Length: 540
Image: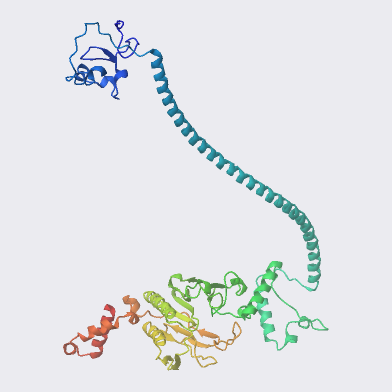
């Protein structure tokens, strides 16, 4: 039975698709999607491919039947075309294919859903943990807030009670102060003679032979029993407490508060044992002085020590003064410059207070010497400057003695002592103190660049309890030291530091000098030797 007109060989659908191939052998037409096993789209096929295309039937190889016996030729009959697949069979095949595709699709969907579900569950778990933590924190804050609220209520109650107590105490204190002042007499409106009266009373009591001769009622013409009379500043309650603490602290440290009785222009203290956090300047000195301190805590070499050490310089406010921080080393040394004037002339008196704790270490001593030498060189470049280095060096191995108002040194075998002696000679420093301690040694030195008649004696009015190893000294300086500046200052020349020279290189250079030729050219041996030595020291 012939196919209906316009029907295709592959299926019973009408040929409403343009993607159709025609076999070049049998001229039958097929849907490209029905017969193609390639993934190449129909539009990408070449014309040669379409012209030479064979259908599945024509493309199947034919078997060789050359050995088949010859039979009688059958009667001619009409060739019947292959019948198409039944519609039910096609439907079954399509369903099977769709079923397989759907099964794969379902599997993929299940896997994706499972992954997404697990991710959501993990996030929900994290949110649950966060909520649990926040709930715990909230309960903790609520508990602490409850405790704090109770504490605040207790404090408020105590505060009300304390206010009532303070009010009652103020009333009682007022009554006690009134009763305590019953024996006091207040003299007002004497500002110009206030300090004179205080100083006169202190001097009077100091000269008294015993306590009964100190200022008392009999000196005011009051007959009967003698009662002591005390004269002091009219202080507030808090100032009285501060004054009492200052007296107690001064007593612990050995000070006698004799500063009020003295009129020293400059006061130098070593080994003060002070701490800026516990002792204030006002506890030790009155308002006549500018006080400069360097406590032990500010020293790099001794900051690990908690007590002892420290230096102090107090200068009357009538003398302009300032601290020279740039001159100070990492040791316990303090530099202060004081301007002293007479008429149109003036000088700067530079004072250094130094304390080196025993046993003296070479590194610490050299640290101070190097910085002090540098500072002295800067001072020498300025006109009208005098320098005093005063302090406890604890170099008991050096024996100082006076000879024609100059001090010399013996016992110089120790390298440590040689280093210090070289320092004094290099910078032209004179040692003025010849007052020995109980052991016969001099630990406190007074070094100065001056050659005048400055005198050092033992102080008759010490400011603290006398230490037998460190007798108190008083230095009389002829002020102002208005002298002609040395030639070194005019020429702006800096002395070489012989202690830092490389003497190995100097010796090698000296060996290479042709001395005979030098001596012939220079008749003065001393000048030649000095010129060569200083020149080599400057180079090396």
